[in-house]
Image (cartoon, rainbow, N blue to C red):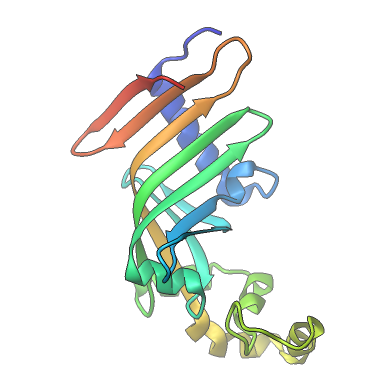
Length: 195
């Protein structure tokens, strides 16, 4: 395999992240975020990438403020994100610090750009991870809600921004894997690493 310049790899990562916001077929649309739960164990789940900001090195997603994820970020804002693109045979690992946005301008803006179908997720009377008697309890609740009522469920909605400290890129190829790391400090450090 020919070595691609680190700058090109870095730009491609951010292009893939940008594409992942709108392209639901992209592996970058569904990153896996890991937080630390109340018992000190890693807790991972898939989220939907909602926004990227290359200049400020931030990626964002929405979540229910009643979720364990929201509580865990409030208790310890250090997070990691993993994305694997099987077509490109590429893994991206992100280390960063999460900031929760609630009842502020970013929160308002994120809610306004959230489609009806996504707003439904915040209308359930049940907090995420609540034990329920049967799955269709959720369906019954959604069928009773009218579109004009979604605004009152905004209180359950939150926006999370992850300020990225580093990106770790791994390309899997039988002739020799390639790995690089991009560290964001006052300037970007780009280094090759052993896979």
